[in-house]
Amino acid sequence: MSDASGGHDIRVNGISADLKKTKGSNNLANYAKKATRKQGAKLVVFQIDNLNHAVHFELNKLSEKGIHGWYFITGKEEKLICF
Image (cartoon, rainbow, N blue to C red):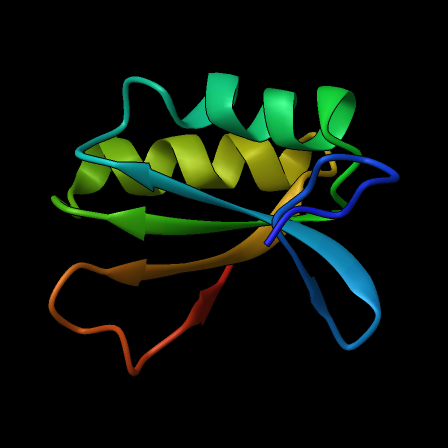
């Protein structure tokens, strides 16, 4: 469900958020920048197929740049992890 005012996917406790799915670390930064800069989201929620050191590294870099949100691993959707 997209919000007409900014193009983000959902609202979480009144905060705009965008959902992104990725297989690894390669596109995390681009997805997060698009969600926050172009789609107006304040948070990004990632579904990650392959969690590894490179993904953790990229998530830490995003957090340092002020981009925050959650992620979950494909197949383990019941556990959201903050970054």
